[in-house]
Image (cartoon, rainbow, N blue to C red; front, side, top):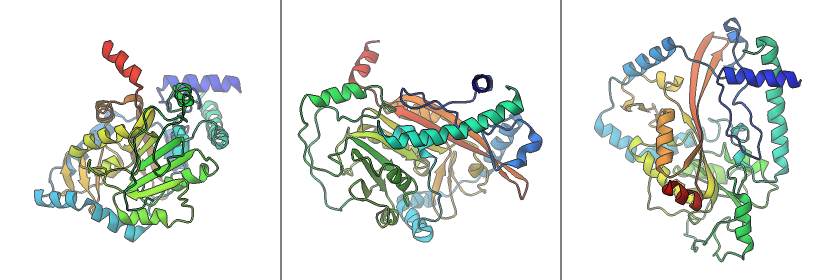
Length: 400
């Protein structure tokens, strides 16, 4: 079996298959292990991982985008889509409720940083994840032979110093953090989650398709607290009315991240993890940088921002018809909601300008197959992990 593993990972290196951000606490695993080695077998599965595009594929996608973006939406309509963005999403959730999106049970596999240090549940996730990879690794080798919150404001005073409980997967400085905490108790006024030592914020929670997989996994973790927000009030109500919602571990609140003046129900600099999954793409490109800048202030030193969103030339972009393009790579759907399609370089620039360090930034290309209709569709996503540096690392970088 060891021989299989050595050859499998050698094979991945040869094919330049991207791996997850390596931390001292979680195993390294490929993003996916179902690799298409025989084109004749393409319709045997619904999805294939790590697809390499040919020059012809890339050129065909570029021409399709050039064609569907030739006619732009009128300026006055663009203003309407921007000013009434929350209204369109509110209508979306009133129609679809929590039935449109599937629960993101894959989150803990792609983002193990969500789990606090010492969680027993992590071993279960790790085992499930690795069993899945082992099966496909063996197959690959045998075939390839190696190639919610109250409306009133909560008053609080920002803590001086760092909170303890830093996730080692998100930071290599958790020991230093807890030593600082031993010096004496921090004096703070109460806010939701003030007693927690590991805090997560999900931006754009929708109907809770990330919230409840996380809450269910960490229900026995008293040190954990989850904040989740959305600017569609209907979405937040869906979260708060769910049977698995627990106010003792979760605070769902209405919030527009584009409004820099709106307060959060907690102080800056206390979050261990921020989830930004298929959210930034719905925001106007001109406002994205300000949103990321503001979110970075919420992270504690060593905290992680976890990002996943649509990539350039994803099938969703190629399917837009003429007259739906708002600006370059930015489109409006028939229901008034919008979507932007990122490149890896854009993601890097945006988060690094906000003062975060890149730990992972990759393009996840997959081939989705409709076996009944014999149709092949390219999926493209960008996934990244960005860490807020500690003060002494910032000083040392300036000295260099």
